[in-house]
Image (cartoon, rainbow, N blue to C red; front, top):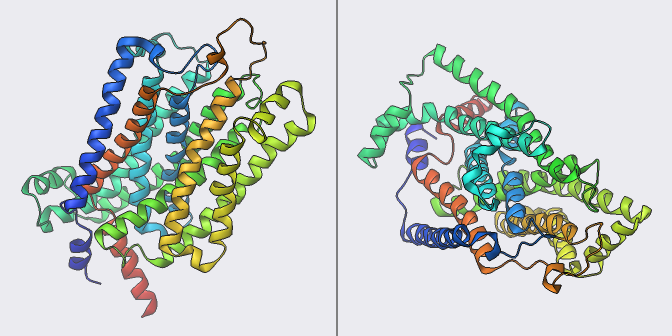
Length: 433
């Protein structure tokens, strides 16, 4: 496989008809979300289903989901890179794109949830370091910066190659030259380049664990049933690994199918990612058992009401669907070699990602509807939480915006790292020789 063929196969391409339709749909859905958000700005949070009891709803569920799926950047691009697992090279760029897109939308989702976004600056001026909310703001900001750097630095040699050999848009070719930062491939540049990626990979791991742990602490530092757990940080991290791995597999399949990347994103790569996903599902299943079994054994009155609503009550259908289709079924299917083929694994990954979103909803909403203080003299509608049209439109709009960012990045940068993949192929050929 020659470098010219690799560059030709992996260079950014114009969208076909389906790509244009996909982009237009995402823009329409995002626009509907923006329109609903303007209505929310004008009418306040009264246009939502949020009330005194359910003061967090699908906005915060969506925020936790974005934070979770962004962990894939540290899982694939850092942990696997530092461990020497070079088989993951073809999907490092995909993982970085997902991580950056998700963490951007996580920050915007918090602003959406604020009743007065014009007071956002108060967090930075009047925020107290004793508050877990400030911890979350600091770690999200830092994580976003490092994630962007981890996406940009490995692109330098690729931009330099595209500057000279890209046959597409002249405008893009010009920008590739600027973004390459005068990369010429000298030994000094390579040394600094490898050091930078290594340091960023090391740095992002504690940041990634920190962002999920701090987000978990926003819940765990309260005394509410369902949240009052010392294992909540590890519980969130385990769930984030599952959501992130599922997101990468789904994106791998779509990009491989769309751009014909079978030589680069191989069946063997799906097999390895399937095994990884199965292991992560088992780990998260263990934390789920731990989170529900111990409170059920002690059975405090508040925990009893909360657990009953999840296991047998109002949320039972959703709860068991998430456990069965999002954790148990993936392990059963992936346990067979046929289940690790691209198409079955893609279907399983979609189930995992959808279940991951609803899992965050189950963490947020049921607990808020079971406070310690008895509910007396309040409207019946306040005892339940039902998202309004505007909430759904804004939430789905943010998901569409995340996909739109990913779509834009896929359009202008190589999906698979050209330089790293070339070195990987050369090393394999030398080993065979």
